[in-house]
Amino acid sequence: MAAEKTVQADGLVGWIDRRFPLISLYKGHLSEYYAPKNFNFWYFFGSLAMLVLVLQIVTGIFLVMHYKPDASLNAAGIPVAFASVEYIMREVPFGWLIRYMHSTGASAFFVVVFLHMFRGLMYGSYREPRELIWIFGCLIFLVLMAEAFMGYLLPWGQMSFWGAQVIVNLFAAVPFIGPDLAVWIRGDYVVGDATLNRFFAFHVIALPLVLLGLVMAHIIALHEVGSNNPDGVEIKAQKDKNGIPLDGIPFHPYYTVHDIMGVAGFALIFFSVVFFAPELSGYFLEYNNFIPADPLVTPSHIAPVWYFTPFYSMLRATTDVFTWVLVAGAAFGAFAFLRAKLGMMSLVGAGAMLVLAIAFRTFDAKFWGVVVMGGAVIILFFLPWLDKSPVKSIRYRPQWQQWLYGAFVVNFVVLGYLGILPPTPAGTIISQIGTVFYFGFFLAMPLWTPLGEFRPVPARVTFQPH
Image (cartoon, rainbow, N blue to C red; front, side, top):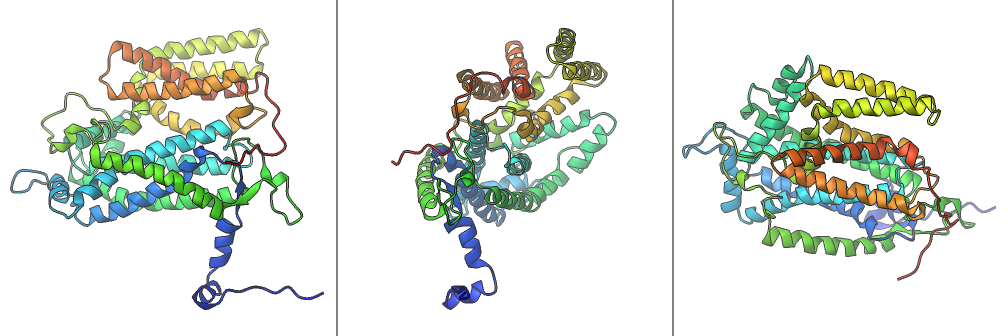
């Protein structure tokens, strides 16, 4: 039997490949990475998230060249940090473009990530064997929120200053260690120069490094088990004699070309905002942030940027009324146990809710608001084990479940809109209902996801050439 010949590249590429696995990486992650052939437009958003990450890093590097993290006042009585942003906008060649690309990119990042996560929710991309991919994705989302919050303070405008003041003060509500924790985060007793410098260090150095590491882990884990698809069918189950999935096609050139169309559409929308509406009526850049930070003048209404507002709305909705919600939940669980409907788990759940109701009355409602806001993100980590549906994709689930997913999206958007507005009694009630629905959607998944008539899942992916 003749020995197999190893084909090696010549020239510069061959010289590099003998010292670094260039060709094997290219094959393993591009030309010989087989992705399902039925990807639709929902699969644009993963590559777009990578694009926006690169955009933010590149524009951020150019901004750092001229930005000064200094809260002291200059000769004109304007904070140096704020003045440096104005210098970038007015004096640096194309500085206005770089700044607006970075600020618009922050919002674009969250738009793309929200849509990317919703695609995973629809098609069950968090289900076995992709649990670790989902966990890495949730960690990316968590770090991205911290990165955005740290960067939001840097312009040192009115909304930046007071928004940071409000958010950091929330940590003071943590029992026992709260006040010391808030001082430790600020680096001072008030939001000031120490806060600005440490937020700058985290935003520019620490968190981007963590973010890049998590993105690499996310992609490596994805390429290890393979991509999901709109049908939720495992393409590795059907292979030809060469071990190539029958329903798979090489990522390059097919999906690299496919993603170019997504990039073109994204660029059209992105640069339309950058050139014609970078503030987007105050949603992307608040008008108060064009006013220098003044610790002696509080804005009439303080609200975070739009991508934080659904969670901020849940925080504001957490009042003493949730004590009675928990008591009602405990009563329902006990009733279900007595009627032998849900078994021992209902009694355990009822006991947990009763303990939470007592704890809710013991500690400040603001602390529980922080817990609810954080829990709204943390609960996403447990999604692979909460969903008990016999099928992955929403395509083959009962129609009422599809409507439920739609209601979840509407509820999330409503919570986001209410978080922008000043609090009102009616808005608080709607936010409370929305918060209960948000957590109920996930916590009740083990009960409702197995219910209904499911359509049969095909053995192979459904695909129509276009």
